[in-house]
Image 1 (cartoon, protein in one colour):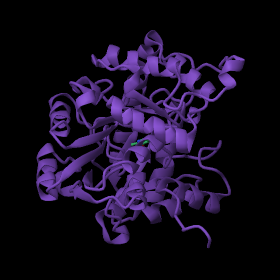
Image 2 (tube, rainbow, N blue to C red):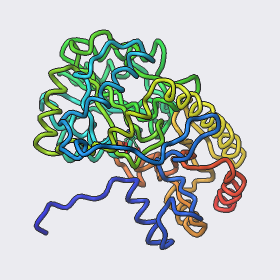
Image 3 (cartoon, protein in one colour):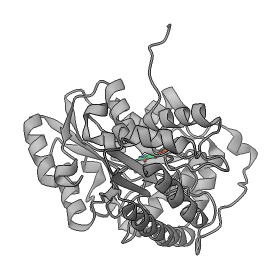
Image 4 (tube, protein in one colour):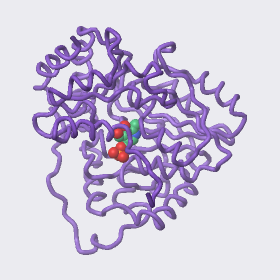
Length: 394
Ligand SMILES: Cc1ncc(COP(=O)(O)O)c(C=O)c1O
């Protein structure tokens, strides 16, 4: 092979297996896409409409500014300043084609002497990015012993052991566990990440999906320009538009300049129509409604599926955020075997092994864990979903 081989990210691996087994794309009509990390892309009860068009002028057909176009950067600035009392300017924002490239670029430019601190149970592609970029990292236990709830003390210990500059990378709410740091715990995490010579990526893809309301580290960041903090957001989940491929990093101005330079070399900016569309979604009165509707709708779905899954003997460890349930299958059943059974019903979950940052595979505890996504599910699918799960657990 002329190029170096590289496998697909775990979620896609499951999508491809599903396609081989069923001949269909997971998410198509008639499938149960419980392995998928996308939200409903239709209007939620009490939520604002999702516009079906975007208007733009001939000038919008020009190249976009490398770090993002002004209307979007201004909308993002106003959003964080309004809802989290931040005091950022548009020069603290770099726009990317979704959350993943934003995370990738941050890890790409990390100085080699900075060690990454990462929890054992985390978002699948973090593993691939660390591997691809050959980044030194320390793993913080997140397993049954601590109920997938590491504390800041665990991070302190890991930092001490690392004996170097560190970057914590944390999805908050966590994908797959839903465990969410907020209030004092998040405030202390921001203080920890603000210590001289250290930093953090707070990956806030699920910002809106938190039982007690949207959560952002930006509420506690005192002066982003004096920090190595990267708060990563995206229009993918909360704003319900994964297809717009729009995400962003909030960081110090000098770090944003690096992202701008990266864009000028490797990305060429992000589609202007997408950026204009997302800027419209962020209008303060509209986004206020969207935040409330997402919290209400997904709190309901989280509670419903919790009840249903627990009644079937799945041991749940889910926290208070995200749109996943994280649980251990009953009776020694592995997630791969469960999927083989589910495929016959055009359904699939994400095997827990793909969220194991040690990638122990069948040897590790994640083997019996699944991430069940209720993100893309309408309220109507519940009864059939539970029936299918029940029949495959037998
Ligand atoms: C934890 C986390 N971060 C970031 C993303 C960003 O996704 P995208 O690149 O689709 O915006 C996702 C989506 O699944 C996610 O789960």
